[in-house]
Length: 405
Image (cartoon, rainbow, N blue to C red):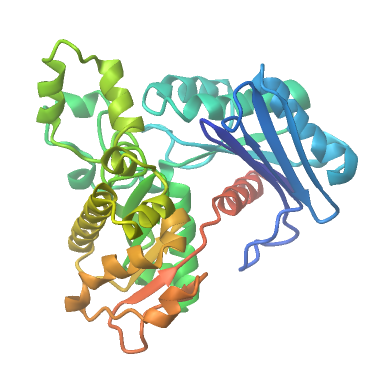
């Protein structure tokens, strides 16, 4: 089964093709074809990078229309040095990461007109992502016709949160309006949970995990019996941890206070909370943890403050997830910061030495991938896992197609 995965963001588009023959293997397969489109490097242009076993391609094209850029990206599948299929009909199914599925979509589904309408309606809750996800769906329809398409929702993994964790303590009318904690990064948390159980040699249902997805966006999940029972992101991806440019949780009274000032508006506060806060807002330098660390080494006090706040919030929320689980078998770090910043892992783990958690400093320092970096006598395992969202989406597509056969 050949599966095309489209993972669209507000400023980039990651895509890949997998071929799964027989059952899903224990280890993730390497894609036959990988492509990335970036709209941010130069205004008015899009940069396309494509990699296959046979060749690579890099080009810059006018970005007047995202649809045209998508068409060019799809064309590299069938033509030129990066060709891996001769015609679109060789693709059996296309899987899309869709950030927000609301209450109605608690698992992956075949995309229909009703599903597209729901994704569009939920764009108000994920304005940076759902519209881009929908554009990818429409691009496939326009250029490839009737190939089956599947929506894999980032919120689905958290859809069985207990009511006590999911419902906000506002008026009950909020519940009736669908205002609740949805959680995000679910595809990553789901993959990392299963991968962690495999690394530990245990059944997923038998381990209590806290998965830390730390990238430009950050979230934690408490996983018990294979299910998410608590998470830090909420009604939108703005809640919870301090992030690259997002504030995470703040006192809502601050927003009321600011809105009462005549020079503020909803649109301005939206920009501040989503684009001008977090690491960038506090440091005044960057949302990139590598640049924050470099500035700290040069004595920048605001960069140090950004680091300290980040670590404080990370420790605090790990503690909250710990309480939801009633114990912990393994702490998992993943995504850009989680996988590549030993100092963050060390700082987070240091606070939980009272649990008997002991980090192996040498293992932690040497860019670990899919291994346990705790000492042999640690009471809690600590894993670094390279998240494979695209592979998880492909597996979800495989399962859904097999069930429908």
